[in-house]
Amino acid sequence: MSPATAVRGPRAQSRAGAGTDASAIRSALSGPLEAFLDELRTGRRLSPRTVDAYAHDLADYLAFAVRHALRGWEEATPTFADAYFAQLMRRGLAGSTVARRRSALRGLHGHLARAGIAEADPLAQLPPPRRDRKLPHALSAEDVERLLGQPEGSEPLALRDRALLELAYASGLRVSELLGIEPAHLDLPGRTVTVIGKRDKQRAVPFGRAAGGALREWLARGRPVLARDPKVRTVFVNARGGRLSRMGFWKILKGHARAAGLATRVHPHVLRHSFATHLLQGGADLRVVQELLGHASVATTAIYTHLDRGYLREVHRTFHPRP
Image 1 (tube, rainbow, N blue to C red):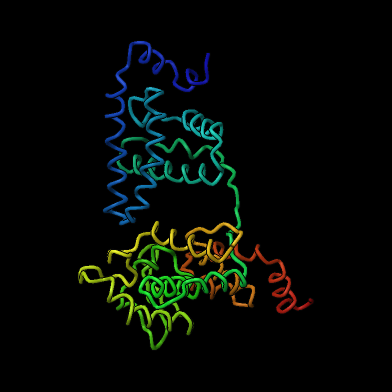
Image 2 (image 1 turned 90 degrees about the horizontal axis):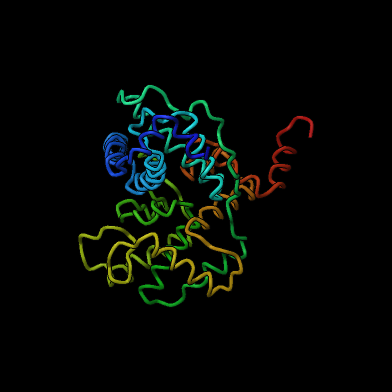
């Protein structure tokens, strides 16, 4: 008996043998899944990007269920769920991806239980998957200086890039937060920016003089040239005057990193990771950095301490009664 046959069980075997209509199965399973995604959009008000990530993960789970001829989600047993995760591992997916997939499935089955469609979560009896713990990649202080020194000149795009990169490093904002800033969110005299982070949590983040000066130049002499449409309210715009996208930011970052001769890999959050790492290396309190980053838990921020063992030793020597 093949592993797939063992997963499906006798009833599924007979249905498959009778020529089960895969489209009918997909239709029956898709309805509750779409209802769950609607709950994420309207009930929990998750961002479109987050909902898209859930939809992507659940589409794979749906395809697996259709292949194994489940007539309804109430037939998803622990054995079925275990087989799904086993095939994810066989496909070579990273532990972090499998863990994210598990979270999406737990959300779906929790919704099904609340809706009375299924009685239990088939994942509840499974051990959690091992998750790869990857340390955030940060640039050295020297590399950051080289990167921030790249946007030269007084052309509008150069002024934009200088303000964009300076503020990204000075504030440690998430890329989505950075690109969503509007002029009303900036307090230039006080050098703070107010953003709405995850779970609609508002926080005010300070930035330094270099970022403040670059922002003033961009807002006074660069942005008015590019952003001619009053409907575009974000501080940072693209070359056509529209809202700057995440991909656009990444291209800007990669272009200047290449021009700076950085040998290391860059990604959209590299300046955020560098911001946190350099603060901690300089002696900043972990909970202060947590607040600046907008982390819900200090445990999330603590991963940055793994980048500098010297920081941990210094904290221990400073605060332990018997250093």
